[in-house]
Image (cartoon, rainbow, N blue to C red):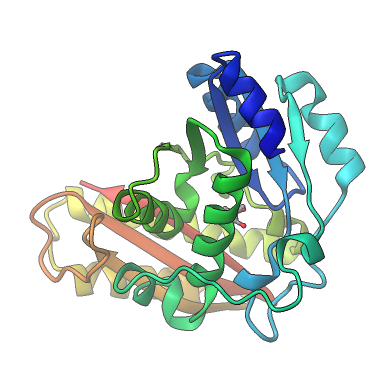
Length: 271
Ligand code: PAF
């Protein structure tokens, strides 16, 4: 992959990179389309990164179907799929990790303490292997995007990071590879995330600027659905991810909810 990228750069080609963990859906396809708007060569990686899963999380059961993914992207303009083995990415005695001081300690980082260390490490490794000019990440993982932008800036990585909008099913559910875990009933309960975000936006528009009141309404709405267990609901500064009490400028509302055994996340900028 490194030699190929060197060759492409020698030929003055611009490389766009979409890192994924596979089991691709329309959300991923939108990242690829965005990539091709910014470059003439598109690299897709498929790698279920063990370092970003905690104990008891779904590393083993994470959905995988390489053949289906490869068939799906054939028409999408992907030039290369980079799909390494875990033993090549993390050989024995691997010991170097990337950590950030602040951003990982909010939102998802509270219940997933080593998650962003795993994400920052694999993304750095993939950047060093693929050597892209630009890389595209979805805004559904808002905190991940914030962590990567910060890391790229802090480490002077010469890569343009582009955030692409959340892609939703017709009924509003944010697309995620994990949606495949949901039973029919759970799929209904999963709609509560988007409904809570929309309701919060309405409350703010109608003049409610107290973040705790908006969060309480979201809690009530989500709890009224079966099999939901809220991990967090936060109203925070989109840059620093620190909590905001009174809403006076656009804020990020982010939430993580377990629906049965499936943990889903979603977010919206409220303004
Ligand atoms: O968003 C994902 O799918 C993963 O976190 C990423 C960026 C591919 C790193 O493993």
